[in-house]
Amino acid sequence: MAILSKTNDSDLLHLLKDGREDAFTEIYNRYWQQLVATGYYYTRSKEAAEEIVNDVLMGLWLRRASLEINSLPAYLGTAVKFAVFKAMARNKKRNQVLGGQLSDDAATAAHNDTEQHLDALFMDEWLRGVVEQLPEKARLVFVFSREEELSIKEIAGKMDLSPKSVEYHMTKALKAIRDSIRKMTIFLHSFLS
Image (cartoon, rainbow, N blue to C red):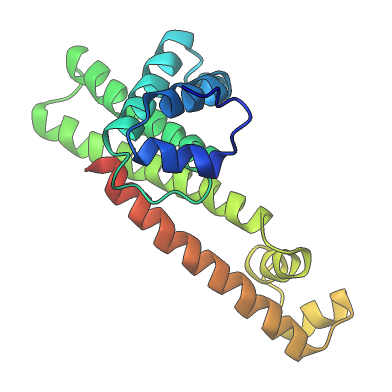
């Protein structure tokens, strides 16, 4: 077997799809520490973070043939964050039920509320990441429009652009966000199945 430490992620993914265990081992070694740090940031538990990362990486191996991954670090990072949020919701519900604080119906309702809140937090963080990756002008136009609630005319004046240019950059930003949402939907479907 060849040493894969100098192989780029795209080639590793192709080898992984072919069932190469050494490609999986390289991905594991390459991203383990970073993914555990991400998990730890949210859980504040090394053991929980390691368990989540193991589950995510095992899922990568088990679904290797069907996954469409453009960026391995982005895919793995998103998978870990999503798994953390789901684990937090499960733990909160379990603690409330074990503590006798909730009836089964109330526990189910609280779990659903918690899940929705965590999903909203996850999506907000994910969207911020998408916006941060936009080209500078598109990112600024989007932020001025959505977060500062400026009009096209106000943005044009602030950025010293024509209104048509502002519309162009807004269209570009929205298209990139829509494409990312489509990819996220595909990711979530593959992650949850």
